Amino acid sequence: METKAQHFLIGAFVLALTAGIFATIIWLARLDISQGVSHYVIYFTDSVAGLGLGGDVRFNGIKVGSVSAIDIDPDDSRRVKVTVEIASNTPIRADSVAQLQLQGITGLSFVQISGGTPAAKLLKARRSQPPPVIQSKSSDIARLFESAPEVLAKTTAALDKLNQILGADNQKSISRVLADAADVADTIDQHRQDLAHILEAASKSADDVSVAAKAVREITEKLNHVSDETEQTMRSTRQTMENANKLVVDAQQSVSQLNGILGDNRQAISEFANDGLPQLTRFVMEARQLVAVLSRLSERLENDPSRFIFGDKAPERRAQ
Image (tube, rainbow, N blue to C red; front, side):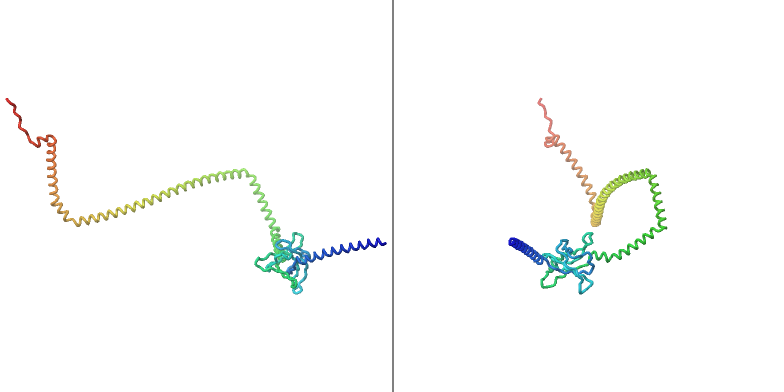
């Protein structure tokens, strides 16, 4: 009996020790969790269908916390108060905005929080103060449900118009159109070879047009070259005409000056023509005679210089 009592005490002590260790671990874990998260409040004016306790809270797509409570706002029953636990190192700012988004095709929702601008003030949770409030905006889900009646009405109107189009009268017209299209298809099939020839001829015509276009381009380039040369020739001709006009003007000026000189010396010219010209003529004739005499003297001097200087000598007599 004494041995059994000792075993019981030892077992009880081990169990108590184990329980104490587990309690200490849980207490430390809760302490770490309470110190590593911050609580924020988000007010949604739209439906929060699909959002439940423990739902994800994401910051720019990264999971940073979870939903800890969902309540109706006691001050305004049109709003839903959502309390979230977010890691304390998450940079929630004053202009950050929360929005509900769908999580795949499961129908569940999660809270998406935008980063805000770097210059905005950080929202810090204080132990002695109520949790900070993160701004919110309408979710894509809510806008989808809000626009659903309008989309449904437009769909109904489109169906009505489709029913009108597919009415009995229009069905007959559509049938005739389809029959005509079938006839056209048969006709095209019967004349397939003709169409092939036409397409081949069109291809050849396109090639001819291409060649003609190339020739036209070459002719255009030549015409441009001729035009440039013609323009250059015209410029040269204009320059020549300008020079000719200048020469004509200079000639006119020279004639005017000559007329002026003749007018000023008309009397002297008349006197020279009446008196001086005959005297000049006689002078010229006498000068010609003098030149002739000098020419003969020069010839005699060249032919017989001694005879020209000493004259004719007497003939020598022979002794008897």
